Image 1 (cartoon, one colour):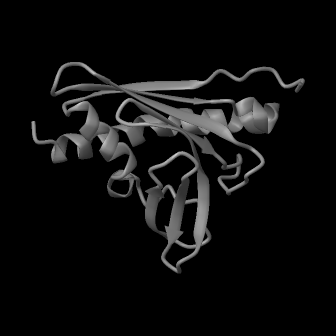
Image 2 (cartoon, helix red, strand yellow):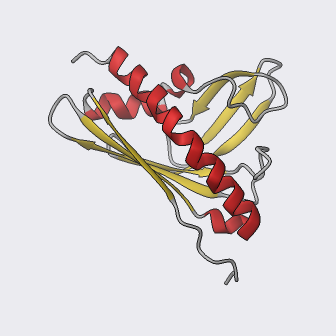
Amino acid sequence: MSDTPMIEPVRRSVRVKAAQAHAFEVFTAGVDRWWPRRASIGSAPMRTMTIEPRLGGRWIETGTDGSQAVVGKVLVWEPPTRFVVSWDINMNWKPDPNVGSEVEVRFTALGSHETLVELEHRKFERMGEVPGAKLRKDVDGGWPGMLDLFKADAEKTSSV
């Protein structure tokens, strides 16, 4: 057992004017449409961002030179209600399979044309106290903007 104290998870939510299945699809299969290119972890500028839609699938960034950087892997895959991925990125924003915080995203239908999307980024303590606290602070500032981009794309592409 680690001596590192638990670091509080980052929790964010957004209401989306879109059906539950559509919101799930946009967040996962459509991630490349809304994930900003400036949020790159690879050695080359980002060309695409992909979440492979299955348990054990990879969350990968492909660079303009064809190189791939693994953001994480799919730990839970339960469409259209939730998924969990590892976040294998260290405090310096570089891929590192030894750090493994987690991101869980839940999709709750609030009727046929609205969905509550709840994101929890957790287990920062796996990185150690100082690196975990730094990454938590960084993602706490980043997820709100990411969720805004996701929401805009989900609502723009929704049929409701």
